[in-house]
Length: 401
Image (cartoon, rainbow, N blue to C red):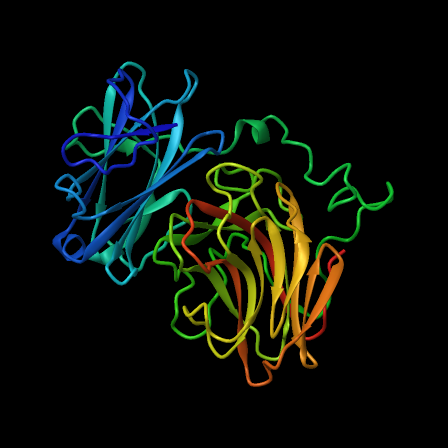
């Protein structure tokens, strides 16, 4: 999918300059004054049927053309490209989200078509499912037919359902042949993947868009990112089926040194475990120093520098950060990995696919704390994306297989 520079009021989102195309969809982004006036940044993501992602961020007022209304011109990347998904989010100068809009639509061969997305104050705090968008404060279908007249209201249309490879039976399970998640050890039976027993599990199924957060703090705390539930087989889902559930948490960030994570209260349960997929290549790689799991005293906080223990990624290697930092080895990319983090007995322990490491820590969760799972960048990055499945907290360790 190509996202091209539009007309005078276009968002500068081009991967490369695009010439005239007989087949294109112009997605118009309009905003009520209550949203347009405080807006500082517009972030746009386009997803193709194959799951390819294009993300760009535009600063409102950075140039004379960066003004409301914005346009995003989408043209097919290949002759067989048909459907696509556009997600747009607006932020104020403090990094607070002013609303998310989404549209699933398709190309009409040989024609220019239009779709309009409107940001209103009533939708600022509304988060809808992956096939919905907010209209006047309520979630409505985001799957529409594009129209020839930009002022015309769209009719119901097709959704971007999933990836062609998954529709055709799916790719091989990640990890086979390397003794990893699905391959077992020395050709033996695969280990038990999913936790049982005295644990609290957040598996992102139909009733959960994202985990419930402590206090009034919303789960979506990133100035330039989102956490959302992605169904298995969706173009938003991980490239391979999740180990434990039919839906996963998708955490994406455009370009920020800010947290983009889900928060879970863990009072009396200082052991955290999750399945995580780190992309192997592409613009969505996590390349800057970024925390993946964290345990911290107190309620959830946006302050990534607050005292905590964490598992983080830098230069392709996982690290345990406590009173000391411990190198956990090269990060397994392009497959599901099991990550665990515990805080007890004056030490923090990290677990990567069953390999455990310890470091001293003076922190305690005896009076309550929280877990953070997702992306929390220590330095500015760009186009980062991870998927998370089956986040569990427990009073006793639940080791990775």
